[in-house]
Amino acid sequence: MTGQKKIPSFDLTRNYNRVKEEVRVALDRVLETQHFILGPEVEALEKEIAAYLDVESAVGCASGTDALVLALMSLDLKEGDEVITTPFTFFATASCITRNGAKPVFADVDPDTYNLSMESVMEKITPKTKAVLPVHLFGQTCKLELIKDELSQRGIALIEDCAQAIGAHRVIDKKICRAGSIGDLGCFSFFPTKNLGCYGDGGMISIPHGKEKTERIKSLRVHGSGKTYFHDEVGINSRLDAVQAAILRVRLRHLEEWNEERRIVAERYMILFKEKGLLDKVTPPVEESGNRHVYHQYVVKAERRDELQAYLEERGVVTRVYYPLPLHIQHCFSYLGYKEGDFPVSEMLAGTVLALPIFPELLPEEQERTVEEIAGFYGRHS
Ligand SMILES: *Cc1c(COP(=O)(O)O)cnc(C)c1O
Image (cartoon, rainbow, N blue to C red; front, side, top):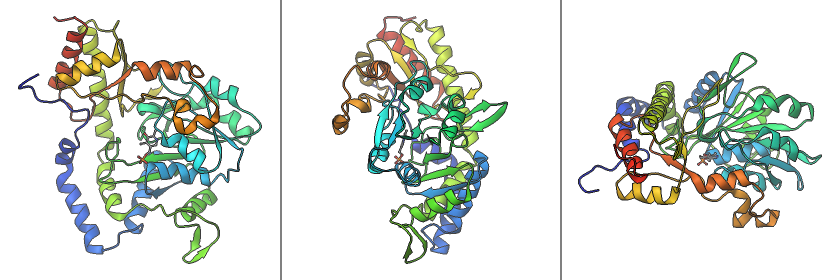
């Protein structure tokens, strides 16, 4: 529509303006030290994240993808080993499995939360299963309490993909457990658009328990060397840099506030859908009880999704589809032998989900306009 301002799906500039001064002070501090790779700034961030998550330790690395690769490397997977995961996620969740020489085994997701169905995970376990890799998708934790004990009894590792869920939690045995503190390892991404983003690439692995695991992963991220130039095994080069760590330390102090603002945005969408009588056309995301959703994305199921998206685009409302093609039918995984129809829920979601604009600074007026346009598309003008 002419003359109307675009409503973006995210806006990093608005967020930067809120922390500009603090970030510049932190950057200056690093520039004065001229210490750029790992070092005290990264160690300080690792301690702060570990404290925030209430885990024993955390290890920084170069990206969320590398966090997943390193976590799986530490399991010493061999060819033929299986890792169970979801086909309805970002690509890196599955590629880290094949990059470690193992085989991704997919299980279907829950139609309401879009998260891995724990029942279908249990059905996929075989003697070759070495790990389960659930994703806390769009900011909501999976029901890990349903499988956690059984997996550990069977010696199967539980690796959480927390790239979209920093700060999310669920209550397990009356205890608040943050994403990344429930399984054996948690993998985080600091990609700029994530709830806690840096100004480049960055990632982290959380280690709830185990000094040996921490030491192993710290060694794997620096070419497998415990002592410089002495290599115990072949690792990778995946380090977090001090500039990103300093920025993240500033931003971590605001994370709770920003996550709370995302939750308010989500609540307002719900109110607006109800007011406009849209709930028969648009199904909002379901927040399970006993769990704090941090709305990395606000993903609805919508009737005539593609037409709606094009209509909104024309009117300046930017939306996204996460994810248009489930991983089991991606070309690169055709060798695994899956076919269309294998995971009906994931396939249904791929055709119906739409991510509406959400970020902490999104204005109530922008949300109102977004929902008005949606109402217009379905012929529900007030
Ligand atoms: C973003 C993301 C990753 C990868 O993180 P990068 O930092 O971009 O490498 C992995 N898994 C999920 C679910 C993600 O959303």
